[in-house]
Length: 51
Image 1 (tube, one colour):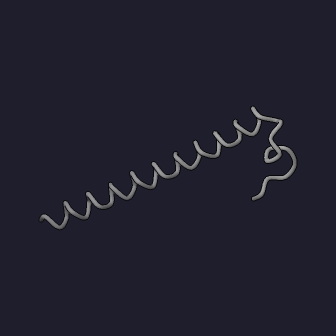
Image 2: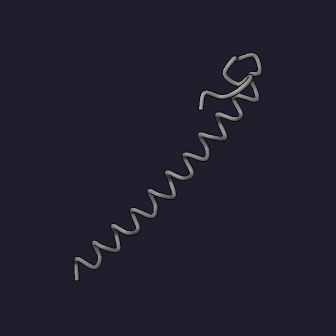
């Protein structure tokens, strides 16, 4: 019985961490794009990005 609860808790934890990672990655990308658009004088935003 306890292994079922453990498995369920593990699955829920995995789903939550995956969702949080995806949200954090999206926010980081948005913040980078915002910074690039806000500061046009920086050489990194102007032209092609290193990636």
